[in-house]
Amino acid sequence: MIESVGNRKGVFHCFSEDYDYARRVLDAGFMISFTGNITYKNSPLPALASRIPLDCIMLETDAPFMAPVPHRGKRCEPLFTREIAAKLSEIHNISLDKVDEITTLTAIKLFFSENKLKLAD
Image (cartoon, rainbow, N blue to C red; front, side, top):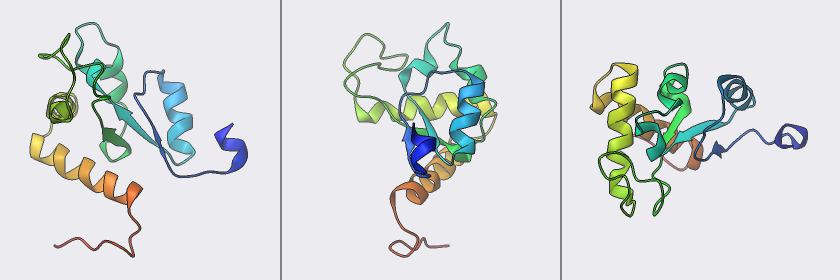
């Protein structure tokens, strides 16, 4: 449906589909976000996330639901986004600081016009 109206900006929240669907989402110009379920023991999402460029991934917590490990079963809080970033750091084998940098720039590109926000070098 989104492809038919020509929208080319947005994020697929709490992504949990397969790689073929992810490819369609990315090819259409959208971002993919992962939540606490990427940290669950038997989740297929780490394997999927490893195939997605980090600059196409956004972080979220889906608070108050789906708290990441080690907070699973508790009320999810925005602070727990750090756990999702840490999991992506592990998956992509890069530093947590690099995940923070890349996903922050991705969020800025999605939510702010380049004309409205200039980043310091």
